[in-house]
Structures are given as structure tokens and as C-alpha cells.
Amino acid sequence: NIRKLLIISLTLGISISGISQNPIVQTYFTADPAPLVHDGTVYVYTSHDEDTTVNNFFTMYDWRCYSSDDMVNWTDHGTVASLKDFGWMDKTNGAWAPQAIERNGKFYLYVPIHGEGISVLVSDSPTGPFHDPLGHRLILDSEDVWTDIDPTVFIDDDGQAYLYWGNPSVYYVKLNEDMISYDRSIGKKGIVPVEMNTESFGESPSKDGRHHSNYTEGPWIYKRNDLYYLIYAAGGIPEYIAYSTAPTDEGPWTYQGYIMERAPHLAFTNHPGIIDFKGNSYFFYHDQDLSGGEGFKRSVSVEQFEYNEDGSIPMLTPTKE
Ligand code: FUB
Image 1: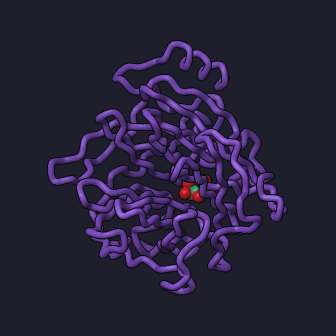
Image 2: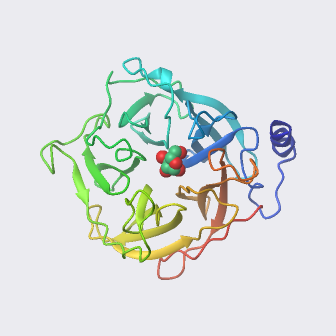
């Protein structure tokens, strides 16, 4: 049973190559990993696929957090936030892909709730408790329940914070210093569409006709050596992982290609998160091995990698180590 397996791997700190065995969480089904490095520790925020799936769809009620200071041994901090934290909302399902960031000693957890846009929670600690500072959502721009999902947040060197999100297009807002409001003087009431310049998918669009370009969802933004990276799920369903780079936060974005292929044991979705930690680079994603191939019961995994000399990211292969 999966809970027993995790207890064993946590106790023994199973490691073959200096990083933990995949999937890194074996006691719950977890997805959409969002790593945060803070004070010598990696915190990974995840969404949580329930063991019992309702209506053969994503069944997700809360968000979890795991931490490690060696990428081998992981501590389970349990449920750090849930749909119940939003008293103004009566939604009981739809706790999708989160991301957290620290600013001035406070931790901001940005969460999409399917059909309800993007909301934010705040805590004094990376592991919670988180509370809702607004009493309403942060962003809901589209009536399409798929559009306002998958937030990724980033603070640039000049202190300007950005929140990007979206399926099947990317948008951003410039967050104010308080991290819970944004500059409404730009774009459409503050919301700016991002031109992704992705190559045409080159195949028929997926059944619902939505996926004409490479970019699909799950953006992850960061900066490295003055280059901005946007990593994302691409290609419609099933998803592979691709990325684009730009000289500024606001583009122009140049498509750089795939970094993780679709593979038989990967889920029909994938969702990236990249960090540097203690001198190494790590790519987080999810697969469906632990559930024996159920795309609504996913598991967070991680691969260590090295950037190529020109800053490009090599093709990454899912492993079990
Ligand atoms: O986990 C629910 C959805 O599946 C996420 O929002 C997408 O990124 C995909 O992973």
C-alpha cells in the first residue's frame, strides 16, 4: 500500500543518485508541483488527487506541502490549505495547481479553483496556516472555466512581482507590493495577454478544438543569468513540456522546444516546476505510475539536470530514482 511505501522511503531516505526515489510522495496522489526554496529548504506545494474519483474527472479538495533540505528525505506537512479556506465560495471540488512565494517574511499561496478563477492565501510560515486576506478571488477574467487557472508567480530583481497564468493562452498582471492586488492601469483592467510565438502545433487540434498552438497550460516562470524562462505544458492532450525564453518579463518570447516528451507512463497532463537548490537544478513534474495509469491520480516526481552552456535546457527523461 502506498502509505506504507512512503513511510519506508522516508525512514530509509532511499537514494540511488543523491535525489529521492520517484515519485517523491507515495502516500497520497499529488500533482502540479510548485517548489519554493526558502532558507536552505525546498518546499513543494502540490495539488492533491483524491483516492476516489468523482465523475471520472479531477477530484481535488485541498493543497499539500512537502519539504526537504537534501532532496532525499521529505517531510509531509499535510494539508496546508483547502477549498474550505474560502468562506465566500461554495465550490467543493476544483483545488488545482498552486504556487507559493515569499515576500517580506510572508508566504503567498496562489491557487486556481476550477471555474472560480485565481485566489491568494497568506501565512507567516511556508507551511501555514494560510488565511484568505481578501474575502474574494484575486482574478477572474474569463467566463471559460478553463482559462483562469495555473498561476505562476515571480519577483524580479527590481522588486516588481508578476503573476502569469492561463489555458490555452497566457496572461499576466503586475502585482502590487502587497502581493494581493495588482496594477489595473495596464492591459485590460490590469490583465495583459502574452504573445507566446509558439510554433503551430502542426497536428489537428484536440477534440475540443482549443489547442492550436504549443502552449497549453501550467506556466512556470523564472529568471536565470538575465534570461527569462517560461516552462509550460504544451501540445494539447496528452501534454508534453516545452519552454520559451525572453529578454524581459514581458517578452518577446521565443519558443525553444520540448524538454519532456509525452511518455506512456506520464499522465495526459503534465505540469512543470524548476528550481536551483544547493548548486543543482531540479525539474519537478507529475506522472501516473503510482495509480497504475490513472490520469486523475497523479504523483509528483523530480529529475536533477544541468543546463547546457548556452542556457538551454536538455531533454529530460522521467526516471524512477
Ligand atoms: O491538476 C488540475 C489541472 O491538470 C492543472 O490545473 C493542470 O495544469 C493540469 O495538471
